[in-house]
Image (cartoon, rainbow, N blue to C red; front, side, top):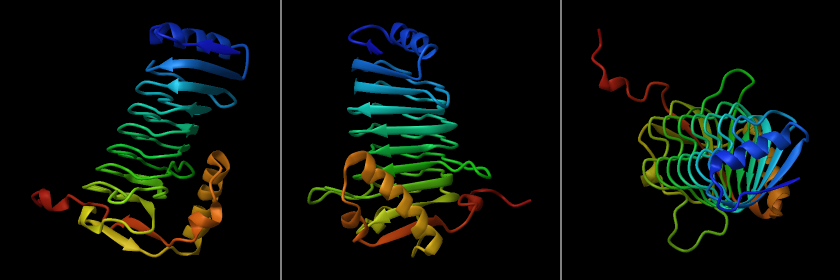
Amino acid sequence: MTVEAGLRRYEAVNEEINKELEKRKKVVVSDVNGQRYIGCALDAGKTVEVHGTPGNDMACYLNGGKVVVYGNCQDAVGNTMNGGEIVVHGHSGDAMGYGMRDGQIYIRDNVACRGGIHMKEFRQMRPVLVIGKNAGSFLGEYMAGGTIVLLGLDMKRGEKLFGTHCASGMHGGKIFVRGNFPKENLSPNIKIANLDDTDKKELEGYVKKYCKYFDADYEKIMSKQFKKLVPATSRPYANLYTPN
């Protein structure tokens, strides 16, 4: 079943998508032109395939479903998602995966500013954000848990793996970075570490999935060394408060 978005308002498009999802497990949305909230709170077992450029808050509160985008995304994709999977065959705007609690996001190309801001985890709920190219400033800002993978593929001369203030206020989770990266853009509360065996096994699973979705070369990606960025303390701003 195909829903044509065109120039219709987002309310009408989402209403039609939701009606079709009541009758079937998968809906294709064509000619998308910035309509917001597509795939919002999508439940497990349901899939929305998007062709075009979805607007802000696509797949927000995702609840176990799957959203696949053949195009680029705007801001706040996967906002506060609870589970499921987002696959983007393109790049995304700001605040990708904002406050995500679980599930996985795979971006073929780059993410703009504040990707993975305030990601968190609890017990078995561990969110993952995999970025194929590079990221803007404030990647992993206030990150409290989960995993970000930054692959640095197909970067042009002069481009940096991430922008300024990377992991500012990060107090949990980890960021895997591939190849050379601008240490001067790291926040001072971050440690750079080698991957242990558990890290390597975890990373391999994410990279294999990325390669499957985007037809990338696994051996080529893994031929470069990865490092792990982790917080040096769980209280990066402790010095700002007056002790009792």
